[in-house]
Length: 96
Image 1 (cartoon, rainbow, N blue to C red):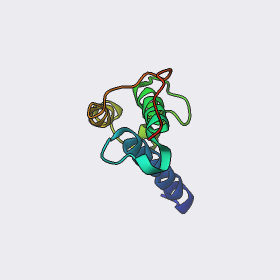
Image 2 (cartoon, rainbow, N blue to C red; image 1 turned 60 degrees about the horizontal axis):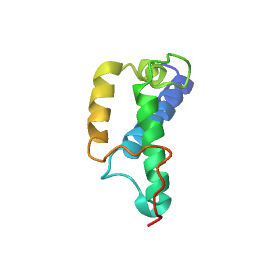
Image 3 (spheres, helix red, strand yellow; image 1 turned 30 degrees about the horizontal axis):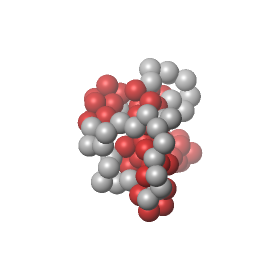
Image 4 (cartoon, rainbow, N blue to C red; image 1 turned 90 degrees about the horizontal axis):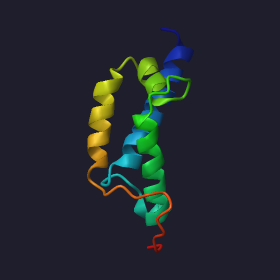
């Protein structure tokens, strides 16, 4: 594997790690984003992980680049989403 390809894989691994952090209640940076933005980010990330879009930058594409099984990764990542009630995008919440 050439160095550039390895750098590319590391970049997409960090994208996937950020998705996990954006979904997992224990890892969400509430102070940085505030509750409203954190819920919006989480909802968007859950949608990204659930998507069956195979295009570049999609969850499926990232899994392919990282050579991981998408269905197993999706199941594990979305299990973290169950720790917080899903907030609708249009729900108005008071800022913390």
